Length: 250
Image (cartoon, rainbow, N blue to C red; front, side):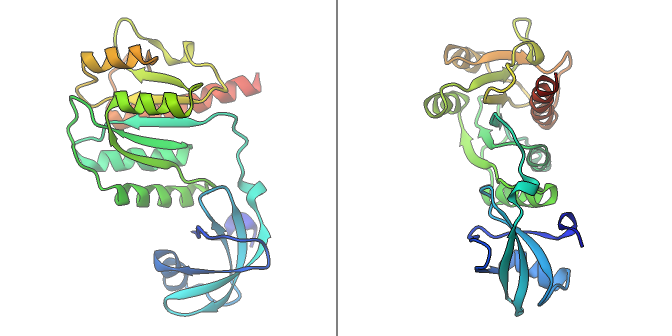
């Protein structure tokens, strides 16, 4: 079986080849009780922080497996990307749509997902543990080495302020369908770190857009049509990657 065919599991405490780690909880349940893997079978483990190791199951009980790490496959799955991508979105009233957005953003590739608490927001509470579980599942499915940082509800102004303090060179774009906005493709500079802000169904309030503009955010559009929150978030994520790929291939 080739390395790309091996099942993929999350183990945050990975070490070097030759060491042993344990796999328990939901990860081991799926490995041992769903896939029926046992002693002698090979699996892939990633730690969500950039490391991927192949391992051999050496011991298997109902609740835990002992995995001997045999080979570092980090380079096999590493993506050479010179920029970071953060997506901030207002959660939708129908939580399924927000969960769908999180899943697809992780599959496409995102470094940070922030949730916006806006003037026109339709949802004031989120189960962060649920969002993290969805992100982990999507990362395993799409074989990502890194888990995105997921941040709880915060005002647009606060997110922009935090980003300016932590990564002052980050380009910040507010997706806002307005006559003063310009297309993202004409504004974004490939290779630069970027934060994309997606407002609620009712859009950002006038006060919010003013505050973000004062803080250094640029108003951009993703096209001529008004998009739902989850559609806009996914489109923004894909657009940034495509613009960078076009630049690297030119």
